[in-house]
Image 1 (tube, helix red, strand yellow):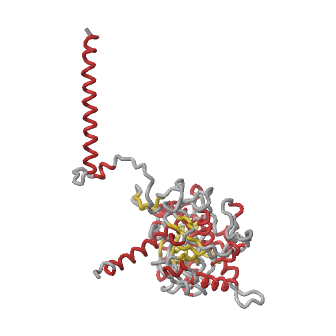
Image 2 (cartoon, rainbow, N blue to C red; image 1 turned 180 degrees about the horizontal axis):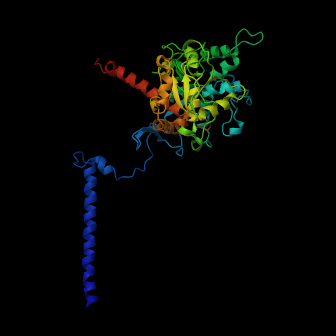
Image 3 (cartoon, rainbow, N blue to C red; image 1 turned 90 degrees about the horizontal axis):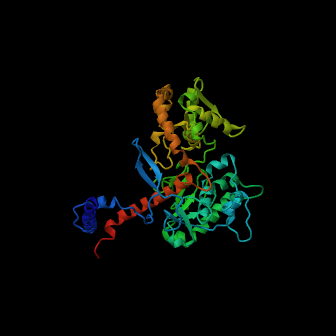
Length: 470
């Protein structure tokens, strides 16, 4: 009896399955029609939410601003290095002039073979090294040039923010590979019987070369990128090439018509002290010094405030405020001092900026910025108030003001800033090959954002001029 029942049930089960399958097909077809119908009553975004995108992503900004679970805006990479880098994917297509080595790696003592313009970058051990000491803090031109060369090297893994191309008419940016900071540091004074310094001669050659190029004439140099990070670099040429976009440390020695925040990029110094690993970073109670400063105290112009602060703070028991230099193991001592201090002073010197800010970041010592005219790298994507304290110069020199302010910062608030410092410190690291969101990558992204802003302004100005009926 049971066997007969089971046999009679088979057609019923089969029929049920067929009906269910038919309904599934009907619903799927209906949804497809609804999705592409312009009068759909179901939001298209809801339908697309279930679709897995298998296409190659279109070119997007490298940074996505996303809200973390703590409510803070964080910077995340949306262009991973594992993807192949070509000119269709890169944010910026850059044409780099093949200038003779005397303008770049020749200044490092490099000599290539006959007709060789650039060193090989595939083998890191064969890349000419940049001189140490204070030279290194303004070495930005070196890292950017290496990164452009590496963008064409198949065996070098790096981000895809920028790629070097050989056709200047396709370029977003024309890069000028002149190691201007090194040229100033090493060759700014005439030697022996020389009438003019090597630095001056190179600048004059540079101006003559650029003014004669079709690339410069096309837009009057506005799409050119020149690195002049040392405040005294390009002194002869900067006015003549002022239409170009500069990569600078600050605007302290530039008239506003030559350099300004609208068109130019502020790049961080390369910090001199060693980076503190996250696991070794001392916490609030492990940092016995409240305030740390070591450097030149007697400065001119805006830096006169250092002397005033020195006399206000030098006798405080939990303050380290002394003269220091790179000599006699000064950098290592400064690194240890910052790493054991809660707050590190970044005071205006001869110019608004200094390397000391980036030494503090590398040491996870909360920076206290006392420099009213300072411009900060990547400030359009980084909120410095999350990991720095800003004090106006007029307030800082009031007796008791600065120490009372810093002593009022409790452990909980300081710890939040310290944690944020550890999160953002990677954005101030120069290295080869470059990495996602490091200093080199961040600079290229800043150049891209400046370019987009320039295009926006041009388009806004053209709203009516091109739409008028003729």
